Amino acid sequence: MGEAISIFMLHPETFTGSIAAGYQNPLAGYVAGRGGVLGEATGTTVASVFVIFEPSFVCAMWDEGVAVRGAAGAAKVYWDQVGDFGRKYLADAEGVARIAQLGEKIIAETPIAGLPMYAGWRNMPLADDDAARALQVMFVLRELRGDVHFNLLVNSGITPVEAHMMHGGEAYTRMFGWPEPFADGAQKRERYAEVEEATNRRMTDIFDAALDRAEADELARLSVGALERLKADVPPAG
Image (cartoon, rainbow, N blue to C red; front, side):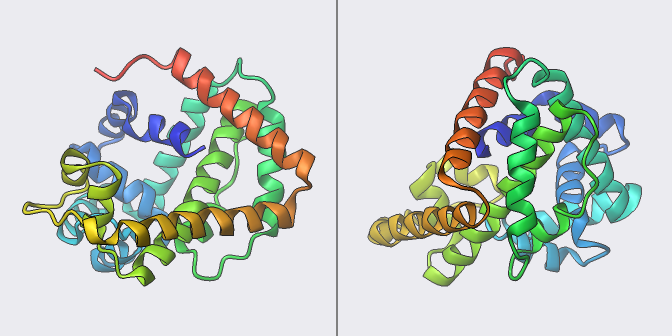
C-alpha cells in the first residue's frame, strides 16, 4: 500500500493537478494538501507532524500552500486527486471493492491516539466508486503506518537524516529538504532495524484486531495486485 501511494504522490500527473488547482509550486500543494487535515495550524506544528522533512522547508511550503485555498481546501483538492488517480488507474484491478471493505474495517477499529495524520485523514469522506475508494482507503492506511513508524523513530533517538541515509542514501535525503552534510547513522543500524521491526509488529497487531487471518491474507494479496496494476498502467514518470 505504501508503494502504491508513493506512485500517486510522486507522479507528474499529481504535480500537474496541483498546479491546475492554483498551486504555483506543486510541493506547496503537496504539503498543504497532505497536512491540510491538521486544520489551520502553524507551519511549525505541521513540520512536527511530518517528522522526517526538514522543518523550514515544510514551514515555507505550508505557508505558501494554505495561502491558496486554506488548509481544508487544500486537503479536499489532494483527497480528490487520490480518488481520481484510483479511478483512472485501478478500475481494472482485482477486488478493489474488497480492498476498500477490508481496509475500512481496520480504520473503524484503530484508535486515533498519538496518530495525528491518520486521525485527520480517516475523517475525510470516501468516494462512492470502488476504484477511487480503494486508493483512498490505502492512503489512510499508509498514513496510519507512517504515524506508527514516526512515533517509534522519534523515540529511538535516530535523527531523520540518519534514517533517510540508512534507508535511501544521499539523493533520498535531499528529497526531504535536508542540506548537507549528512550523518550516515552507521552506528545506529541495529537500532533502525529494531524500529522497522517494531513498526511491523504494531501494524500486525492493528490488522489482527480488525481482521481474521484469512481476511488479512486476502487484503495483502489484493493490495499487491493493485500495486502491480498501477505499475503496469500508470505512465512512467518523466
